[in-house]
Amino acid sequence: MADAHVKNPPPAIDGNALVSMCLSRVGIDRMFGVVGIPVTSLANRALALGVRFIAFHNEQSAGYAASAYGYLTGRPGVLLTVSGPGCVHGLAGLSNAAANAWPMILISGSSDQSLIGRGDFQELDQVAAVKPFSKFSAKATDITEIPKSVFSVVDWAVAGRPGGTYLDLPTDVLHQTVDESEAERLIAEALKSRDKALIEKPRIDNSKIKKAVELLRSAQRPLIVFGKGAAYAKSENELTKLVESTGIPFLPTPMGKGLLSDKHELAATAARSLAIGKCDVALVVGARLNWLLHFGEPPKWSKDVKFIIVDVCEEEIELRKPFSGILGDATEVVGMIHKEIKDDPFCLGKTHPWVEAVRNKGKDNVAKMEVQLSKVVVPFNFLTPMKIIRDAILGVGSPAPVVVSEGANTMDVGRSVLVQTEPRTRLDAGTWGTMGVGLGYCIAAAVASPDRLVVAVEGDSGFGFSAMEVETLVRYQLPVVVIVFNNGGVYGGDRRNPDEITGPYKDDPAPTSFVPGAAYHILIEAFGGKGYLAGTPDELKSALAESFSARKPAVINVTIDPYAGAESGRLQHKN
Image (tube, rainbow, N blue to C red; front, side, top):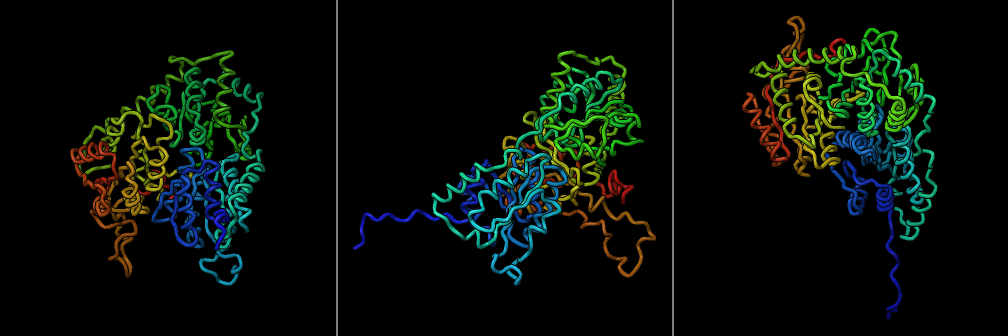
C-alpha cells in the first residue's frame, strides 16, 4: 500500500511556461502572432499568465501590429511566429520597427538542435536571417538560458534608439523542463544580472542646453520641429510649455502631429514650405533629417540654417553634422531647455514679423484648401469624402480617435486634410513608406488604447495587403472603422498611354488595375461585421455616424473616381 504521506513531485515547468513567466515578470502584457509548430503551447501558457495574445492570419500584419504597439505604449511589442517561413514573414514587422525606431521583439520557434543541418522541418538559420533588422539577438540553447535571453531582448529593444530584437527558441528547449523552484531561481538570477547600463538614459550635457537656448534667443526666425521620436518619448507637455513660453512656431512630422494640436495658433504645418525655407535656427526634436525633412538641405531649407538636433542616438547626430547636437531623451532635454529659458525668459509675441509671416501664410493656404474642400464633387474625388471624414472624426471629441492612414493619394490627401488634436493619434506609412500596415496598426491601436475609436483611411491597394484581418477585428470585437477609398487600383484605374497598350498580353488588365467596383464592404459581413457602400455625401455621412456610434468592426467602401488623384501620389518623380 502506498504511503499516503508521500508528496507528489512539484509540477514541472517547460520552456513554453518559463518564457511566458519571464515575459510577464518584465511587464509584457500583449503579444501578437500566428501559432503553429512549435509555439502553440507558448501562446496558451502566456495567455494563462495574463499576457493577452492577439491571433492574426498573417505574420506580416501581426508584425506591423507589434511594431506599432511598441511605439504607442513605450513597451516592446512582441510578435510570436513559427519557425522558418513564419520567421521570414515576421521580418516585415521587425524591419519596420528598425526603420521607425520602435521597440519590438520577434520571438520564433526553431528546429530541434540535434537535427540542424539535416533538413529538419522548416529549418533555417534564423539568427542569421534577422541580422540586418535586429539590434540584438539571443538563442536559448538550453532551458536554463531562457530567463537571461528573454530579459536581454526586452532591454535591448528599448535601449538607446529603440528598435527590433530577436529571440530564437529551439523546439527541444521548449520541451525541456525544470521544477518550479529552479524556474524561480533562474528568473531571480537573470533579473539580478540585467545590464542596468542598457536601460539608463544618457546624461545630458548642460553646456549644450545653454548653447541651444542662446541660439534660439538670438534667432530671427526660429522653428521647433518634432517627430515621432518625441511622440514616443511622450514629450507633449514639455513641448507645449516651450512653444507657448517662447512663442516659437512649430512644425510636426506627419506622425508628430497632435503632440500640440494642429489647430494651435503657432502650428506651421499649413505654412511648411515657408517655415523650413526661411527659418534661421531649427530645434529638431525626435525627428531625423531624412527624406521626410528633405535631408535638411537646400533648396527646401536655407543654406544658412543652424540645426540643433535632439536625439537619443549619438550616431544619428554625428551623421547629420548639425550646428549643435544634444544627446538625450527628448522629454528631458526639452524640459531642461524650457527651464533654462524660464530663468531669463524671451517670447517672440504674436506681432513678431516671423510669427506673423508663418501665421498669415498658414491662413492663406488653409483658406485655399477650404475653397477646394467646399466643392462637392460626385463621383467622389479625394477631397470631398476626406472633408466629410475629417468633420466626423473631429465630431467625436476627446478622447480623439486614432487615425491610421496608408495609400498613395489617400495618405497624401489625408495628411493635408485630417486634423490631429491629441498625441499619438496618427499612424501612417512612416519612415519606410511601408504599405500594408493598415489593419495591423488598427489592431495595435485598439489594443493599446481601448478607450479610443480607431479609424483607418486607406486606399484600396493598401487595404488589400491585409484585408483578411477584418476577421480579426470581428473576432476580438475591436472598435475599428476601416474606410476604403476604392478607385479601382494602385493610384487608380488604367492610366497607360495608348502606345503602352501593346504586345501579346495587351488585353490583360493594367498592372495598376483591380476589379472595378470591388465590394470590399461585403468582405467584413462574411464574418459578422458591418459593411457600408458610400458613393454620395449623404451615404458617407450616414455610414460614419452609424459606425462611429456603434464602435464595432466596420468597413465603409467609398467609391472614388478612378481617374482622381495622381500616380505615385506626391512621389511621382521617383516612379
